[in-house]
Image (cartoon, rainbow, N blue to C red; front, side, top):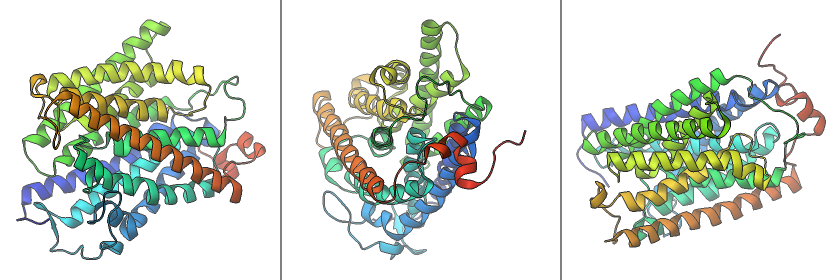
Length: 407
């Protein structure tokens, strides 16, 4: 799929690509590093850095081909293995295919990196690398093809502008599988496990917020009005969700917190991912309010009620927020709400909602089952979890022989 080169579109897409990489390193890395205990701060940074390196290579070797090469309804072909044919003259629309590959490499990096927050402070580094390599190959790349690469969900007319299902539901439900496969951290929930540095988390959240403009507006693949609208939707959804979480926490617990408002902003950004090219400004505000409120209760009430140990609320924010965003996209995309219209073949809200629900359900089911199976295989072979003594000492020293802080 080639066209005439647009210098403006290309310049914007190169910028957006840098923004998306910035979301993981340093954005997500700092966001997560501040929330773990001081003895594990480097382990989280290390995981994000290592995933960035590993996913970059795997995406070039075979991930891009599985995701975006022409193929069947469930996976792409092998014509783009090792980036075959991706040269200086190859085009995707009005931008070079090299830029398209790099833009989506950023998505392939941050999606598995999000899962880190669910199993933080207890997984072996070696097991993490094996899991992420396998997960990206047989989960992330095929799901990307389903939605964006000409697969069956794209043909069904699902609306997922920048990754509500592909990134956030996908990573969030894999995070839940990891929580259940690994079990709870030693001492959870009776032992206090406060964040070691909320300044890191706040700075990381800010980096993610800014980087999300590249994530969502870059998904227009052009420097045009749709990119401009996507930026506006991103900002309004994040702002309204941050306020919804903040006021909800204030009413429920008596005081608003930095962690709360940062988490709320991320919930809004998550919900904006599927919506940012399909809804209008007031739809974005509504989506943000709903996402901030529901994710607040998922993280603070649902998790304790069900008893799973999702260390940094990956399921509560990314999976739940992604579901909220994907569902509400199916409503607020309608012309009557100022949206851009329905997906392929859909002519009314009910039909669009059916497509959204099928897409959400398919990703939830496939990703959970495959992720849990992968984790169980790894547990039976190399072992998933660090020893009790290593967990007590902290992963920084036990796995990397380094300290994040020198007292």
